[in-house]
Length: 206
Ligand code: MN
Image 1: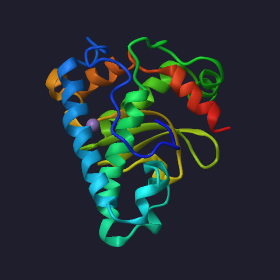
Image 2: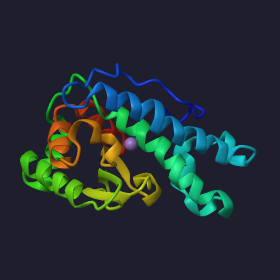
Image 3: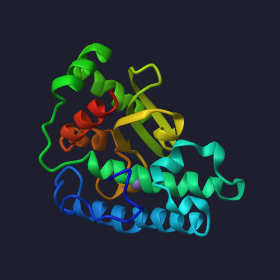
């Protein structure tokens, strides 16, 4: 994912089965080739023939107020779906450190008392999100860490927030393996978090 690249549909940075047993191959494959692909295709269709065509999805989502009214919701839904999944794939890794480290680790402890407490708060946000959406760890406008929920494919970057971590809590992200057991999916997530990427993002915002 690069802010300078023209929008394109990229392969995952690992194999579909790389996150087994925590996130299964079939879920990753359907999620990427069907769900993510559909958001991407509809996003490209929505910006086709407009001045947005030469802009990155990140720049487009950062200021929704300038979007043409007739395209706005399609871009929020599908540009959001496109960007949020790009972000999500990068924040997952088959070689997870299992815990934050360095500057982000310190900031998490400062903000949430402990990593364990942070995970509890994050899980609570994931379990209390009614319907479909995302849970994010972000740097807020005051430069503080905050855990937030967004609905549907609304993106943290459209709220002026700087995302560090994200969890897709749409049922399509976990239903094949976990069915209604969202809590087990959240617990499994911690085994595949790419904390190197999270640390990189955190430092890049300073
Ligand atoms: Mn998804």
